[in-house]
Amino acid sequence: DYSPHHHSVDHHYPHRRPEKFGGPKRTHLVQHRSINPMGDRIAYLAIISIVHAASKLTSDAPAEGPGVRGGLPPRLLALAKSLEAREGQLTSTRIAAAIEESGVQEEDLQRWEAFAHPASDSYGRKMIYEDGRFEVMAMSWVEGDISAIHDHGTDMRHGCVKTFGDFEHATYTFDGRNLEISTLDPLRDGDIVKVERDTLHQMGARGHGRRMSLHVYARPQHKDGRGVTDDTRIFVPRGRRVDLVNGGAFFARPKSDSKAIFSDVHADFTTWVRDLILTVRRVSRAEAAGTPAGDESSTDLIGKLFAADETHALLLSDLERHMLETGHHMDSRWWEAIHRTIRDWAALQVEVEAEARPLSDSFADYAEMYDALIGIPCLEGFMANFIRFFFECCVADPAVTKFVSVGCGTGLVEEHIIKVHGVCPDNLLGFDFSPSQVAQAQARGIRAVVRDACALEPVDVGGLQDVAFAGLNVFHYVPAERMAEAIRRTAEILKPGGYFFGDFITPDHIRWYPNVMYGGESKRVVSLRTPRLVERGGRMFQESSIVNLDFRGERVRLNDAGTHKRHLPSMLRVRQYFEDAFGPDVHFYDALSMEPLPPEADTCTSTRYVVIARKADAAPRGAAATARD
Image 1: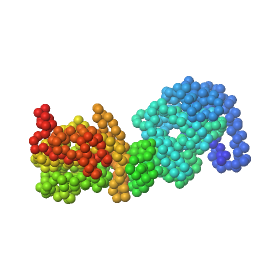
Image 2 (image 1 turned 90 degrees about the vertical axis):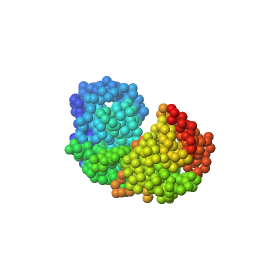
Image 3 (image 1 turned 180 degrees about the horizontal axis):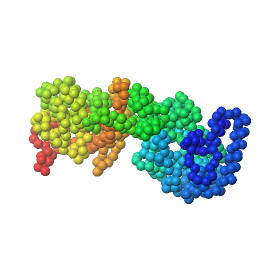
Image 4 (image 1 turned 135 degrees about the horizontal axis):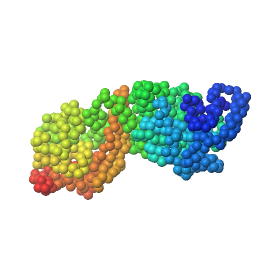
């Protein structure tokens, strides 16, 4: 293709050319047409020679425009001289060294700031200096600004980006058909990112305020009449296409800006969803400013983003490729990208539907998905077995047994106890701190109220009970310093000789804890979990960032459940809490096998254990001491 090109970074778009800052202006070729590849090529090269010679004649004039060093601030001038002086190819390592040595700071770029760029442009972009072999540019970013997924043209071989402020940076791979995200990382103030010919990336402002970035791109040979980053590929996952452009890698630009368009691009789940999220935000911002961006409306984009079937199929395909059968991921960088993207997706849904769908508490959406994700799998997986074990060993007549459930959740397990084991519904009371969970339990016909486990009194449950139950490690969610108190208060609402039974997790539960859990028919409910062990005040906790997706309707429902923190005391300490509150008749079992665990056990095979404790006829020594204190 010998078509003439502008001799500027934005030559394909005259209305977006980098501004010239004084001094002689270069000639810019603006013709774009199909031409004879032989005769027109000769004419084209002749014109370029004239332009190049003319530029040399004026290169010593005091000016500040691209291609002229005379008016550059000292540190930028030092950078330009350093780049010009480097012999051989300008590799990314050499460019990074030149940037470091010059000590360029954000104030050096202020003359080229473009924070007031049009809303249809997704960031500000101005040329600082170019010499045919390399280009130095300043980019300006305000909150919400982001580039498209892009490479840097056919000529560019090496480059670097230096950030002044906080950014988000994503990298991608493309095999000619499949576009997949590789990393999604933050960039900090002063970071230098190397850019190679095969780099596919996307960067954008993170957080509030304004910031700038310095960009240097180089090619092996000096070329006049053609920008270093000409023929940049812009990837448009939502359109399944690649646009070929000259100029800025602007997000959600119209198709008409493209020199050529290539179709049949297939994006993975994270790339597809992230692209739609960012496009919704970009187009909505442009619409609000009265300058619509691209060829799409925010309404249509939102409809596409929240359509359940397509995103569900993409998600399951990605998880199948990246997850082990145990539900653990194989690539931490990929996992970070997909988890963060889904959290951003959930945040956008809150923005879109905030007024239409107010929630009563943070568990409101989670309550709607909880049974499919947690309740039913756990009930069928291990809880039904240990509940049956307890009733067979410890309950003589379920019909007259007074039963209280500490942390009843949605009432699923309580409903099982009533239906399978014959506890009278009027004799069972559940309580939970989440109004949404309690509402779910009440809808099942369970007597349930909102209560705090650390504030229980016998009067709250209608007098002393025969049995207290706590399922799904409820006591681990109690503040660490109040776990012993919660266990003691549970003992106080039981009759002498009454029983407690419930399940707990071992300190090494994270070795089992899966990153992905499925629920519902055809895996239509999915939960992504990122756990970590943390220390707080000498105590150990498992913190888990949890985000849930429900594809059972026509539109996806998302729930960012936030970070769940569970205290992980040693099994020996938990045993001591129960012996202090109940007396010596305390027994531990592996929750799956129901094999007894010795008093010295630190963990068990399943990383879940069941406690069965019988309250002594007289007040236990620990409880009496607590009362005296």
